[in-house]
Length: 140
Length: 140
DNA sequence: TGAAACAATGCAATACCATTGCATCGCCCT
DNA sequence: AGGGCGATGCAATGGTATTGCATTGTTTCA
Ligand SMILES: [Mn+2]
Ligand SMILES: [Mn+2]
Ligand SMILES: [Zn+2]
Ligand SMILES: [Zn+2]
View 1 (tube, chains in turn brown, purple, cyan, red):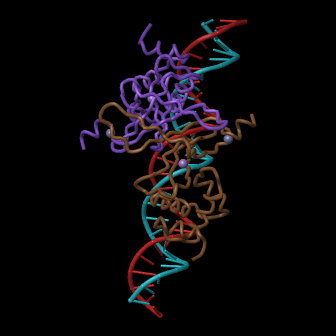
View 2: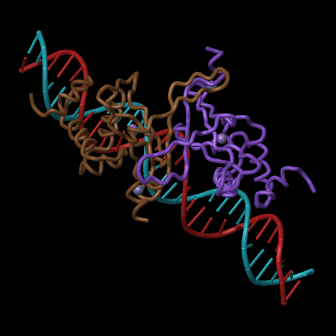
View 3: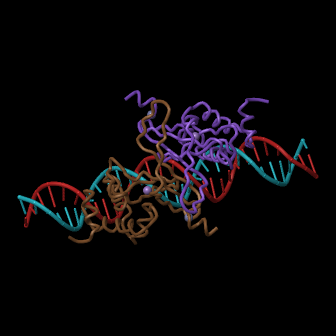
């Protein structure tokens, strides 16, 4: 009966701990997707490995999704409440800004379903667009 | 007036060298996209850094394109003859097989043009599908 | 032809990012 | 209190990408 963030974790079958609540808070406060290093830095001085395992747990339980934006580091962003590890609801496009290097979810832009020739069995589709984000575009 | 592969390099403004011809040959012989480590292994024992810089040169000159498939290592594949560093002709979908970990170009499947809301300025779109490739799908 | 100029190569070193092993800590339950 | 178990933190490791620098090779031109 404490912070509502505890309920968020419990709803995803994640035992609430101090570290996990802190990581969740950082993810909720930040609009952009965050890398492991980003989270570590925003937390002050938390142990990198613990943050890593926290994000892995969050991913396994369907609380966050991974974004491979080609920047070298995987980014993480919160999922929609309805997402499960098996079935993600928010299959949207991601945008990587080549100037400020921020990665954003575009929840309103769905990943299109593309039929493939032959016998391919598609499990997952990742669509990343690169360019200038809205902030950097107007600033140029 | 030697190998036709020399002409391929010269057409892209790349000085032909022994190493570059070897790397080009490996890329032409293999249907799948190759990582730096793949090329190094297929060449026997070539220097990893030289191969790295060879692939960088090939990319800069528009002879190959980079594929970030989320496997941890960037893959490289030959471009269409008409590609230039500024304007790639072959903006196609890539497929990463989660079983055999091979990445293939799907030259017949074009990346769709997706309009974005707001002031985003798109420079590049990368679309990677993951699942079972044709070979692994029938073998399961 | 010989030396300068430039490009390409190879070895060493470095920088990240990600992941694992293992000991310890903290919490819950009996 | 004590056992059990998950979470944490430090150390160590593996993998990929990249840079510095000396050397080698090749082209250019006096
Ligand atoms: Mn997202
Ligand atoms: Mn391709
Ligand atoms: Zn930006
Ligand atoms: Zn396969």
